[in-house]
Length: 226
Image (cartoon, rainbow, N blue to C red; front, side, top):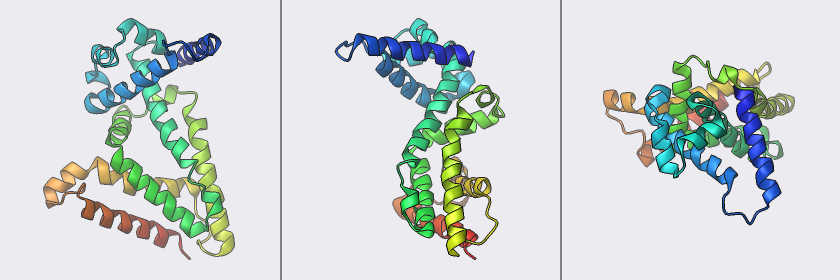
């Protein structure tokens, strides 16, 4: 199913390129708009609760067109997941970590992760939804692993530079470090409501968020230092 969806998306892009940039009917823009609205719909209601009718209405398109582009509701859900990961990895690639000293680069990466999750609750909720499905839809994706490999490769280079300079302790695992960064920055959004109710602390308050951000950065840096 996913091969068919990607094939249709390639066909749309090729057709759009052949028509040239002056045509007002822009399939690429339509697909991007559908994905943006679908992100909010799936994040709020989950896969089962999301409605294609709602997405079609909000994007001023038709269910038939959505199914043409994405194959099915599940196909749109998977495409939305892939697009969400693609966006965060694209921004990560612009952090220029290789140009910074190891500790400074790691600080920038952790701060970015915290800020991204804090300002993209829909992304966090979407990932939580897929975890509730035990990753069964991401398992169908042919692009999700290649899409995320550059993030680990960049972190591996950072770890190697840090160990070589003596800034980081030896034996750090890039995937494990990535998991630790994600766990701390993700939790701040995924559990903010329950944690906030229990301990009566508003994690979205600027002062609280700033302190939490600083604490997470310091925790990660202490974790990697010799």
